[in-house]
Image 1 (cartoon, rainbow, N blue to C red):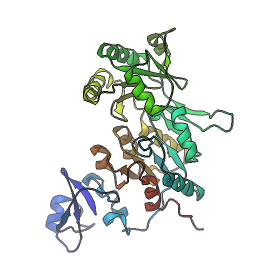
Image 2: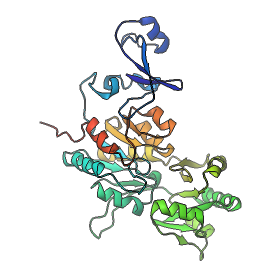
Image 3: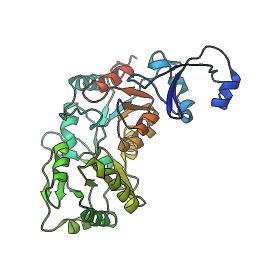
Length: 351
């Protein structure tokens, strides 16, 4: 059994009763288990389980050393949700063939899969199609949930939440003062003031072509709203200050998060991947406790915090690792395939 104590990861073995030690570390657990001696101290590796003490009791029946045998009868999760950048996409922005095949196997036996990404709809769509997902695509950090197209017929918009000008105009003003690039999104189109090195940095990842907004300019276009804002700075040394400034400026009015270093993403208040996954669960009549979600970055935290089986990839942010119950391999290493295997998502139900 693995859990997070302070800043170190410890693996504990259960082999004899020790009520005093148990009560000190885990008050109220005396009827659940008795923990005795630390036997190993080592870094977290893919395949390990990790949990904070406040989540331990909730997941006790699902836990065992290194995710092997279960303490209670396993219940196969009913839904798989995954992030893209930093989780599935490698440095070439490609999916691992093992992950594609595993996703298809899981869906073939009735375990649906959804993508939850900060990308634009048209930027995330090709990956959803490669994975052969059939569920609506969660994009723009959850600000847009849209069904996949059927042939030439566009997918229906299931949910849309826009950033208002009350938030976007102060962001635009400050970004211009500081020399940051600002991305505005309307009708799944990327609008910018000018094509700069920062914009090139963003589009190299998003793989979309920006449109320079001149007539009307961005400040006028923002009066009708934007799906989200992305404030971009390619220099990683400037990024912490950017995040701090934007959080202070509009953090009380909007959600301010990061998907990749250099991308400060701003959505409407209470719009995040967690809220989007809860919406999807309600839409599908699935208990969030029956969901496996995989992510790596701060923008994935709300999603991982609302599901029953949060999974981090190796190299994820510390905050993500702290809430994860299991860790899988990183992008390009078949991490999603390992998740499918570990949770038996490609196991056909009998009866």
